[in-house]
Image (cartoon, rainbow over all chains, first blue to last red; front, side):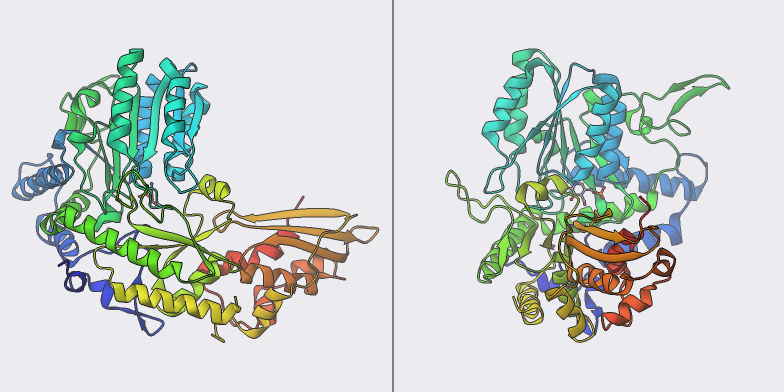
Length: 423
Length: 121
Ligand SMILES: Cc1ncc(COP(=O)(O)O)c(C=O)c1O
């Protein structure tokens, strides 16, 4: 059995109190907490090994360089990718910007179509909108259905409509507001056919920010061109993330940032750039401590096993849906039942809801008074909220340390909302 | 619950003051808290020299705090000149709501009404 109680002891922050009550942290989709192993790895790096990488011929620099490469290897392996395919950035948002600049500005022209999704996070919309504005490319948008799933029928129509003009599909693996798991491998196959049929090189960018914390990711098998993640949502530190790019594609891309570390030969007026893919995309001093911390998070998760983590997460999601469905004032956003064709719920990580007659900020404020931390607002998904006709929602989101008892505290808090506002 | 949502505030949120739309306003101002999804529209009747606010109606949607604070602001501002309205303080609005302080995350909610009212157009 999955022992969330035991894992809780690995997370020092979970033993603190807020407003005199035990912390019930249900804002994991915004950022997760960090286990002692991650905190220790970062502290150990700075107390024992800190030095710049690749630059010095001395003991500490060697240790730091080893830590740098070892960490990259652990992180890449965690995602089923090669270390050379791991381009380090600050977060998912930066990953999208990097691809929009490095790939987009050279590949996209006024004849092209960028296919985006209505359920996506602003981070996976705005960089592409900017790219479209610069290149005059056309944006098309895949809607989601009434049950909160990607409209696959419409997606296929749009693929045909765009035809040879389709340059990019940008989509989240998991929606941060609906929890919906999108069929990435299936869409990757559709796109493989599309490329073949139209003899084009349509690219597939996947925002994995909410998938990486809850699902096993096998990058080599997904068939996508860009897969973006943030360490901080998967038990790692803030300020580090990555975009995974297959070697063959990466070799075609120009560097994103220029400067030290990624050059071959520099004169005062010219420079040539290193062929080694890992170094080509590492301009300047890397965040070695961040990498070390992230690698520790990957090891922590790998030891438990992502398929176990995923299974437990679905239990929490189902339990939350069951509990919230009993409160008449609450409407749950996103899928609540398996679709007929398969038996899986197809939803992970979070449950967002609207409390009839009470604004999500007030719901959150009252939940906070009983120690429950949730997110309120539009969760950086304004188009999604506009489509649903709600200005804002409240989101409870989970991690492997979330317990069923905490969901009961959530329900108690919601009863307090009723007591306060009388609705 | 008295600390978070005092009765004054809840009462004001349930029964807002000066709520509604004006058919012939002298000025209309709108405000938005994008991150909350709150919006506010303020309709004004002004004196002939436009220096004094003669009447206010407002409409909008948002949390209990932004809505109740707008009621307070309307109560405080009607009959005042712009120079006097500029002097309305955060503490004054809080006091009318029965609150002594507000958390950093809710300041924008509290101030949506007054900032909409005093916005340059
Ligand atoms: C689906 C999704 N995409 C992108 C992001 C952006 O992540 P970050 O803030 O780490 O760049 C988030 C996080 O809020 C997210 O949930």
